[in-house]
Length: 208
Image 1 (cartoon, helix red, strand yellow):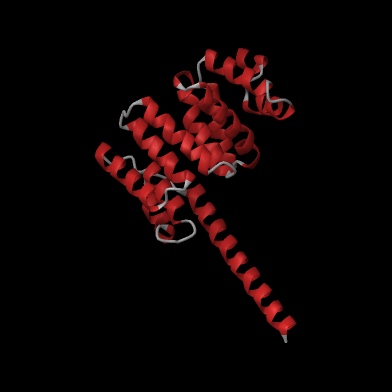
Image 2: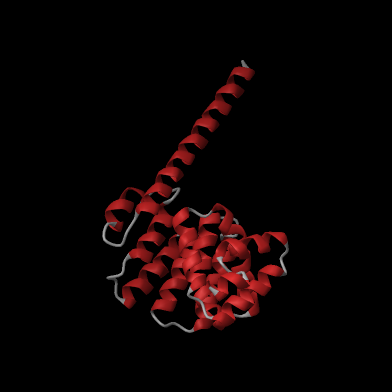
């Protein structure tokens, strides 16, 4: 009897895990298709979801171009209050701080907190890098190391759109930023060299 009970518990746990994975996959597909014009409608089914609700709210905040500075700050603060251990919430807070002209030190602290609590989330690492690369000249050494870590972790698992965005951001970066990023990635080793080639940081790519 105990074996049957154990088997039933295992089955129940597996079914719960599968349901959670399906929910995350559904949100991922909605997230990829979300645009500023249709974001609220696309993400509405996920906003109160206990599993992905915080991510959906952070994405909605990111895409809401019509929000005022005060609205963005307030939403970002509310998001952090709801989920202080969400890397996505801290990234949204950093983005809102930058867009509303908060001091760069405050933006950087939020960015580093996002990296601390969302260290191994590939999609988040890619988006964090996309946000941080244009800020490279203003970042501290610690924040720059975090950007490199995000590139290493986020590039491999990034969706096609996120990869294209990173390539475009790197292409548009100042030469000094490209040189410093390339040197930082070279110090990492083989993984860094692969990213240099694929993201367009090789000397030949820069000369084109």
